[in-house]
Length: 219
Image (cartoon, rainbow, N blue to C red):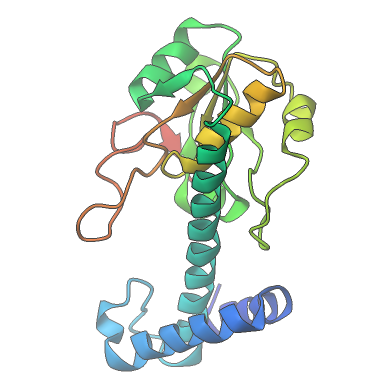
């Protein structure tokens, strides 16, 4: 998609579904990135200057903001659950793969959002002869909790054992606890998630499903 077309579609998207306060903040940050240090912007195309670049960067900032807020809300919800509930346990990505490989009925449920599945990538279970289940813990683009999450799990065929994964382990921990509370157990959490925690430079990728060399794919 060319710069003008991308800008048109993205502009329609962000101006119709994104709250004005968030939109203004992201467009402002994107504009500063383009005007001050365009060569350092990861989304910058030397052939594009101005609004298309700012719009593209704003869209990514919006996605990142919604996902960050979802992680924080899930961490709070998970801490609340731990006051009186529990789940089967935390697994490393490798331990999760082994469980999926050795337990015929075990399922992997990715609870991230559609943009994460499409742009970041997803675990690939074709080598195990299994299909990844995708059920969002939080709704996109609102970032609100999916109140039908347990119903969606049942509709997807989750009965247990189930392994939940998100970006860094916050949403998936809350999801595992919710599944356990609903009787869909045993439920496990991939503690490192798909991308892992932020490092000292604010980057992800040192830990997580991808960093451990496990199969994954992108759209």
